[in-house]
Length: 213
Image 1 (cartoon, rainbow, N blue to C red):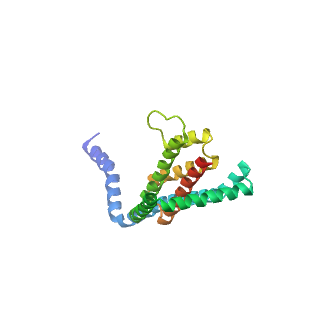
Image 2 (image 1 turned 45 degrees about the vertical axis):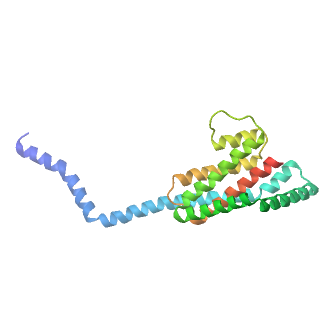
Image 3 (image 1 turned 90 degrees about the vertical axis):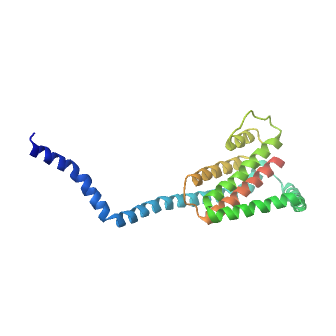
């Protein structure tokens, strides 16, 4: 290879990178807008997924009480007694100053977090479910486990020992999946964060109900 061939080969090997750099420089505005559109579509799809999953959990949660009653064969008298117990519990909760204050403080905290990051608010709401799972396990009388175990494992132990209902366990499992999605997705709407919070509160109520029955 003479010097002319060598020069031609060098120029040919560097021409494409240079050309690409020039094109990128000229069309940097259009490329930037395209990347934003791709990124927006990615997170938009994630947000749609999150909302669709919330729809499913809400639909399931709306039928929990009816199916639970059918499963255990509750009569109208038992349902009335349950309602009476619920009213009594509400009265006790209203009289319990510190507990009421704690609930209010958690709600205020959630509201402030949701303003800054709806995804972080979802994680905060899930944290309350984790704490209730831990409390339910402690109150169940089941043998304590050595070391730390994951929240979902706690729920599974409670379910397998007949402490909580299958529908409660299913709801908790779905909520944890959405919690994980929120932890790895930048876009969760404020509305969906509040919907998740409502479902998290519902799961906590279900845990308390199952433990008391």
